[in-house]
Image 1: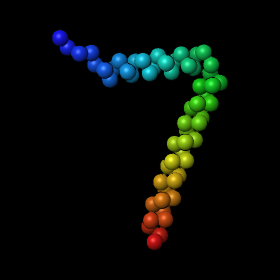
Image 2: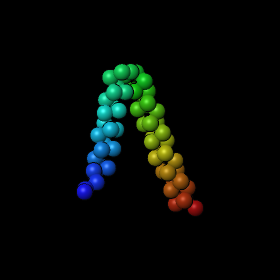
Image 3: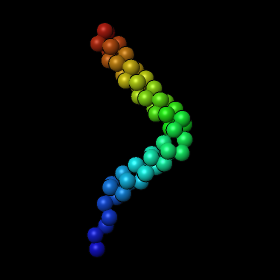
Image 4: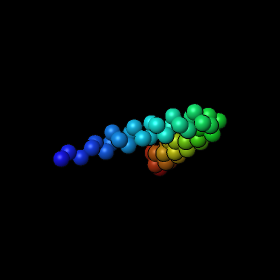
Length: 57
């Protein structure tokens, strides 16, 4: 008996959840994406500052 491909199932569930979140409350979904993008940009900036200070020593 073959086990179902867990990765594919999780991807479909995540896609369905994202579509549900966007369709039921688009403003909240946009806020979540904006917050996530801010966190990602801040992390990249901090890594850049780290390497910049590492190189300047």
